Image (cartoon, rainbow, N blue to C red; front, side):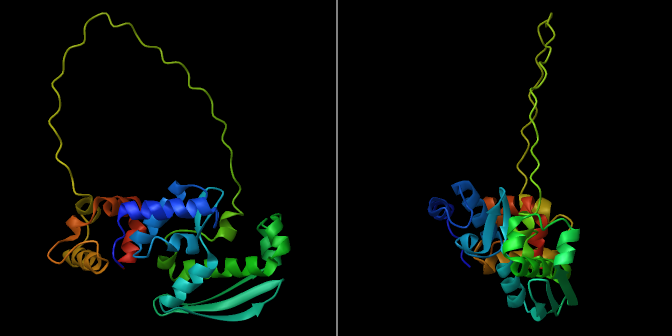
Length: 247
């Protein structure tokens, strides 16, 4: 996918936020998810379709998890799908096979059923838990380190009371401070050089080839020429970046 200019991504984020859909309330939230999509080689508008903001935290919808898993070669065979129990066998060429089941007893034991959504839609909540656990277990690369909205909504929100900082006692300066020479200017460091410092030449070439394929750079350029905003995202989420390039 060709890289969408930052200004256009901001306009999309503004439109998504103004729609008040998908739990995205501010342009900053929509923009952050849009940049995450671009880092994964996806169109920024997919942020509104595949992601949800729950309690201020980004999450990947369970349907999107399953769709990405299947697009990556995964398969699922459902065995049971009722309000009391959901189970299925998930298979992927690289991750093997895993059978996962969730019951209302499991949810009660984990203290999840206090959430009203579990009482209204128990079958859907159990299915979402199966998908998230199975995909995370055998092919976590498609999750980008995120959880499903059903999982995030079950995480208790902790409110931390802010305390006023103690006043800082400033000692009286009796003598004029000595002038210290200014440090020499530190030359800028390429973020990708730092991120890939311990990677082999073959792995670095793989990143270069992938960046060209995604339209981040042109032929003849290297991973060092990847745009700064993408380099910043890669350093902020290295595991997701390496998973996207399968290194």
